[in-house]
Length: 520
Ligand code: GLC
Ligand code: CA
Image (cartoon, rainbow, N blue to C red; front, top):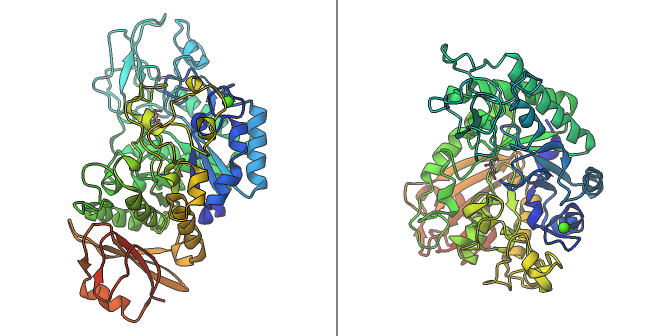
């Protein structure tokens, strides 16, 4: 197990929107390289960069054309290697995005696969053997590419229409459909080997691991994901043997499966069973002062998953957001965001901060879709560093920017927030510093749920390790709440070591406040 994860705190960089070094309006490796000190200044020591590979960008790079070459707009393979080096020189780590489930329809493998004559790539994708036969009865397929191929068949897609599904076989095969291959057949095995080769390629170049896109999506008709889990056990085993310090975090949203599959960490996400959206988003977020939220279902599953995954040594990651969901600033005020960050930065697992969330960057409404972003485009607007042109993101003319800057709140940027002691940015830095000072808050320290009732505030949990025990009390609701007898007893004569909002008393937690109490 990669030890560096024990101390890791990640920052997600959407490369096209982070920092543009050559004034073409789009972020790039050199731009990011110049901002490593900024990321470090937050207290983050690891970076996840979204896909940066050659692509027609119909899905912002999640449609890869060439797995072995970076997109020219970000730089060259050599530049990326330099970036890894610079990252390591600063004591940081960096993971790339691995997209194993599908390619772009412009990928050379797919071009070959469409041909009539059999070749090395004929079985690289999931194909039916009849142009009129689709995948309605197959689970794990989003649509079909029909027509436009020499080959008399239909190809399954994994997400958008431009993303044909790579073939890892079928767990449950329909005996009448010969085209449904088993996971052990040659076609699926060759796909596995190719993806292992891709991982090897970038790891050897200096990357520290991968965030794995749609990790659950590989094997089709895979009830309970059992075959996909088995496959990842093999692939992660292969990777760990060759690169013991490499890490893999899955976009799966079901830690009990993902960690069993060999991932070091799994994200809680805006889809899946985790109730993650109820924390900071949707109509009644728990962290809103409206005080109408519920966190009990979130914690019920979280606690169950912590228990289930304890022996696997893996971690559950709760991100502040990501490039696929609306930013939390759409739903929460600045003060609410601060308490939300206090929660994110005191929970176990590896925190992930989505670029700009540390500033309270807004979800930009009403943008036209850029590169398949659709409603996600509003969460992908350029990072705001200072008050210069385009908020320091790029010196290109405004109309050339990849995505339009947020105009309605242009005062939000790193420079102004650094100067303001009450800014979200300074608050996040302080919280990260606090997390690092307290071993009980470290990624692998224990967690226990102390008080959590349906539709109620506050929520109270403990964090502990051998030498230290802390109690955390959160009352984001805009009204005072009484503490339970058990909590009152626990905090009696103990010291509050960190607070947001008004002071805690012996029996009441003020509205819009959160507190850390030293128990041991
Ligand atoms: C994941 C990515 C998303 C992408 C999709 C297809 O959900 O996070 O951005 O569009 O997979 O690859
Ligand atoms: Ca650029």
